[in-house]
Length: 276
Image (cartoon, rainbow, N blue to C red):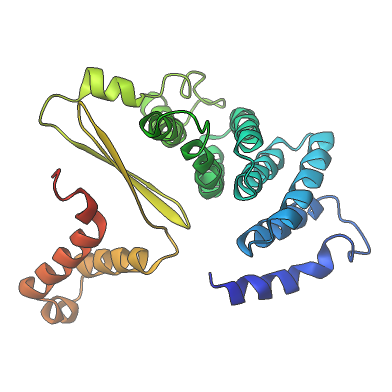
C-alpha cells in the first residue's frame, strides 16, 4: 500500500487506540493496538511503533494471548532492526519463533493452524531479515545460510504436517516438524547432486527472496513482494493461462503469450540466468 493509504489507515484507527480510546473492549483492544503499531512501522515511525509493540507484548503476555504475543515480538524485532539494534532484534525474533510453535498448537485444528501460518507469514519474513545483519562479524554466506534455514523451517512446517497427517485427524501439530526441517547444509550435502539446481522462493508482502541452491553454492536475490506490480503481473499471467473463454484465448495467441512469458521470466529469474 502507498504511504497515503497508510496515513489514512492510521487516522481511521487512531480513535480506537491509546490514548484516545475511551472504553476498552478487552476482546479486540490488543488487535487494534498491534495493528496501529504495524501501521506506524510501515510509516517509518519506528520509535513510536516499538514503544507500542513492547507495551502490547507485555499486556498480551499477562492475558496469555500467545498468538498476539508472537505478532508483538515480530514487530518489536523489525523495529529494533530498523533502529540499528540488530542484537536485540535477533533476541526478540528468537522469542517470537519459539512462541509461534506454542501459538500454532493452541489452534488445534490443522486448517486453523494453516490459516494462522498464512496470517503471520509476512511478519515472520520481515522479522527474519535481521539474520542478514546479525551477527555483524559473521561471514555473509553464513548469515544467508541462517536466513534460509529459518525461512525454510517456517515454510516446510505445514507441508510436513500435510504429508504425515493428510486428513488433518491429529489435533496437535507434528511435534518434530520444526526441528527436522531440512537445512541448507543437508540440501547441499545429501540431496543435490553436481549439476542440479534448486530454486526456492519465499514470498512476503513487501519482499520476495529467491534462492538458487546447488551442491556447492547458494545465491540469494531480493525481488518485489506480494503487493508489487510484479505480483500483479504473475496473477494476470496465471489468469490468462487458465482462461476458459475463447475470446481471451484468441486475444492472446501463442506468439503473444511467449512474449509475456519471456518478460515475466526475465523479471523473476534474470538474476539467476547464468545458473539456469
